[in-house]
Amino acid sequence: MSIISGDSLLEQLTWRYATKKFDPAKKISAADWAVIEKALVLTPSSYGLQPWKFIVVTDSALKAKLRPASWNQSQVVDCSHLVVLTAKVDITEADVDRFVARMAEVQGVSVESLAGYKGYMVGDLVKGPRHAIIQDWAARQTYIALGNLMTSAALLGVDACPFEGIEPAKYDDILGLKGTGYTTISACPLGYRAEGDKYAAVPKVRFEAKDVVEHR
Ligand SMILES: Cc1cc2nc3c(=O)[nH]c(=O)nc-3n(C[C@H](O)[C@H](O)[C@H](O)COP(=O)(O)O)c2cc1C
Image 1 (cartoon, helix red, strand yellow):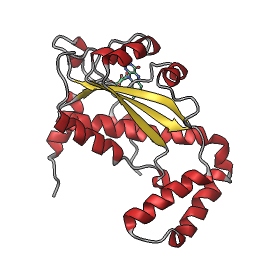
Image 2: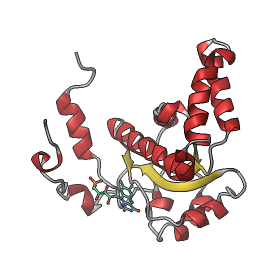
Image 3: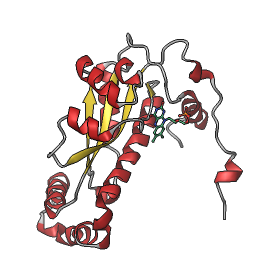
């Protein structure tokens, strides 16, 4: 028994679009934002390591500073909330320890009992061959969060626009991320579409399922 009807799900996924013009007067309510933020935090990640930090910008002056670092896209200033998705630049044993400590706390087990799982993660991500691409690995995890964020917003009737059209190094400067161990990967303005954003009515361009989905 599904929680939401298939029709409603598809309706919202069709309703959403990469919003080009937000209505600057419309703000996401605190209640809706709290849900969106919880959904973001619930995003799954490889091993559950959550190699990210999400920076939520609502301050107008800060948004204005970020606009030139965002290919001058107006959504940055007109949105209600701008989420900047950042990823860890490295994964160390200390990062794994931090996660294991949290796991022990939440699950009510000892850190020692998780030694095997810890060894597995360290062997793979810290000492294994994947360490050479660890920043890419962390960045990939943030795209799961970006997808989750967009879908969650759409289900609440909140508009969003995923953004790779940014200059990550400039974002890092403006947000003071240098030396924090996190770097900007993408951003996502959220809010409500402006009346007259003609892109809202443009039909979705997707390949036919038969061309992108294979059943075997
Ligand atoms: C990772 C990613 C980065 C994107 N970057 C931008 C961007 O910087 N600016 C923009 O207006 N749209 C951006 N888009 C929106 C895409 O162009 C849009 O999602 C795609 O054309 C499909 O259209 P739809 O989202 O309206 O269904 C991005 C989309 C994704 C998934």
